[in-house]
Length: 210
Image (cartoon, rainbow, N blue to C red; front, top):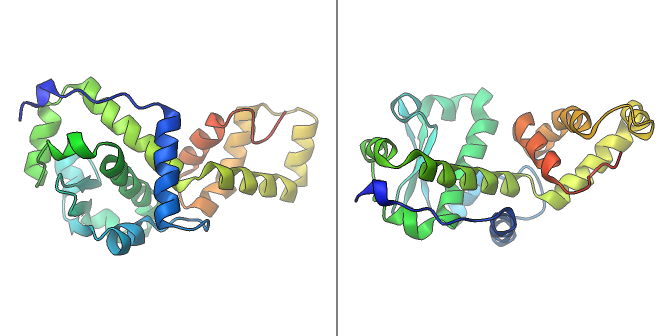
């Protein structure tokens, strides 16, 4: 395939969020953190295959095949507890490709790390950027459902009287509040603090008004 001719369709945030919400509603309940590994392995029947050196060879810790039968993950990171939140996000990212890019990704015919290396080398950077950005947004919407995020954010603020007072007195701007809240919320959703900050900053007019 001539990867240089790839054109990734534009998807806006609302389309990506609806796809993530629909996927969650089909395969999971409201409880968080979402067990994306269980969804992939048990409910979708996609094999998760640990592979030594994947991160080094391909500069990625997870890679889905174009036939949708397997997701290869970096062996060391798969076994290392320190990377579990990162790996959870990476798995959700690969499912983003599965949901959002089914037709185009199938045409890539990626079956091995070597195929992926060729793909990365030849695809135009801007088109690859579109693919990755869309899959990242899907993962964020999936692992941090916005309705649940608003509820958990309100709980965190109520539990923290000092923060609540600062908000009432308008001593903090919205981004500072979100950075503060991202610490406890990241543990609730099983993702990085940065992922939670992105989610909070994207919510229109909230969830905390200042």
